[in-house]
Image (cartoon, rainbow, N blue to C red; front, side, top):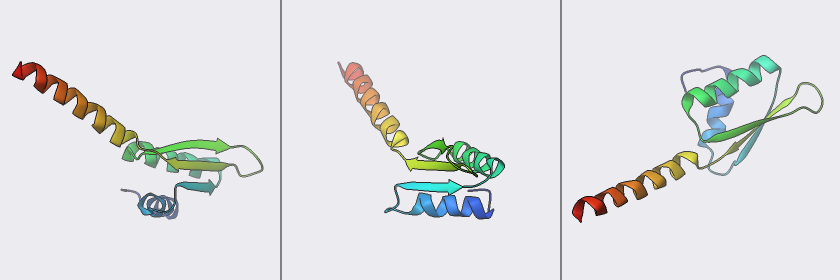
Length: 87
């Protein structure tokens, strides 16, 4: 992570934790948006949604396997291409 603010450091701890699947970040809109931008720019495998109960709202972050699934699909395509080239 390029940003070292307290919110991004908390996000970084969440991303590094093997046990923690979800993270709830209760903060004002600007801080939530900043964290979402950090996730997007870092291309982290995290799905985000906002719970709009109470104030401030809560950003809910859940880890996913998007990059792993992209690599699996690319590997399958590469193997198919290799098979066609060898034929």
